[in-house]
Length: 606
Image 1 (cartoon, rainbow, N blue to C red):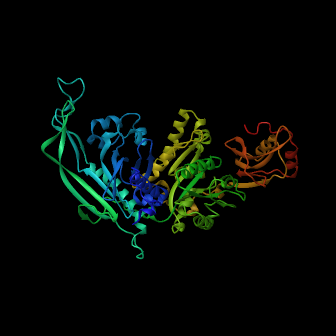
Image 2 (image 1 turned 90 degrees about the vertical axis):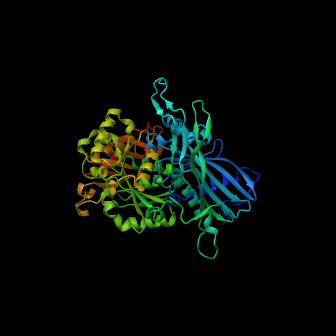
Image 3 (image 1 turned 135 degrees about the vertical axis):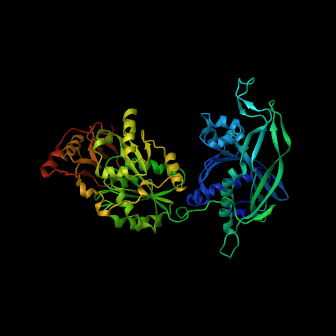
């Protein structure tokens, strides 16, 4: 192996932090390839460099958060050795805290615990009660070898010689820790092992690619382990710490080396507790399905989701499907991400064959880890999931996320039926949009209604457009790691595809009205009123006549009885798409009346 494949410069032993640079480069290389990161067992990596270089990580099948803080390095016989304090942070609800020092339990119960962990670099000393061992990184100064080592007690134990009682009960002690018993008894090595194994496997994945030239194989880790006996410590009521004669514990060193570096100990055949990657982690990209009834706010949610994903280097392709021949939503998205547009029908029925070529074009253009299919507002996600087997050679099925309009639902909860009901019942995640427009009592009632219809879905509220995307990530990761049951969308349904609800059976249609001349606001409102009571959604691009007589190109958005205007994307087309049942378009006389209306758009941005 050669470290120059990771760092394109020679190591500088005089710098004092080359091992921290190498650790950061390994973790960054893994983090930037999300599919590889998942296959190696990582579920999140966060750098924290306020003071010393530090990182917090989540690992598959392990409940705690793990921490790593650089402490320094030294050079000896041409080998740089860097020391990193290794931390384990259980959740405040975890029974694991019972084995930690009382100080750790007190910190975990404090309101600022999570923020302290997130800012580990700044708070490393204050969080010392959670330190369970040391990770050592060795690197040959000439760049020809590297090794990771874990040093931790099999059980990190400390005896309270005089005991610890509840304050104020000294004369008649109410013991928190009995005299001569363990105040700390943490299975330190076992807890740190999944984290260390993910680090070692990452080194192998990143640095092993350049080894064994001409063989077509990567260099594997050389694994060794050794143990030694160390005394158990105890402390008295004055805080004095001493070794306890006759009470011994085992310290374990596990090493994973590559290249020219050799490490002591007996050989081990396999890296213990190494994450075993599943098919969905190593093979095909994931396809998430984003649905939601007409005007619920799917595209707004999608744009925010993409901002979140791309801000974390998780680049994502999008397939958008709109009912009708013109795709406004895709026009709004093109500048922000790569979009494949499917028009002229609803993907859940008439355009099912178009998903494959669209996906193939996206995968060829951008080999992302995931793709999002934004369906039309009248698509039944159950129909799409029923047809996913036909795409099993291209993608793995992911989440079905349904955006539900809080305002529309609160006005007619007892009328939820058909496609709208199917979207709610078959979603893995329900995003309640426009939640800021309801009071707390209304939101509680709405959440209760949604929960009665879908007891398994994660329900997230969108207030002022803000979504808890971290909860979405945690929910999906927990399902991937087998911590959750089957997702609602993945459950097998009884019946045939022909028996499922479609927008065609419910009479929904999209009708397009080309706009050849500018309109006033009054004309737009008149057009929406005349479309009929079955109108659910209207959107398009129009030139609106402002108060000064100038025309302003705007995006027209109508849903849930609300009409709004936004700045229009660059486009030569002017049109309005009206979606619903029994849509009425103006005849020639009606169009003349529209273009003749005089009330101008003095408040079009309100």
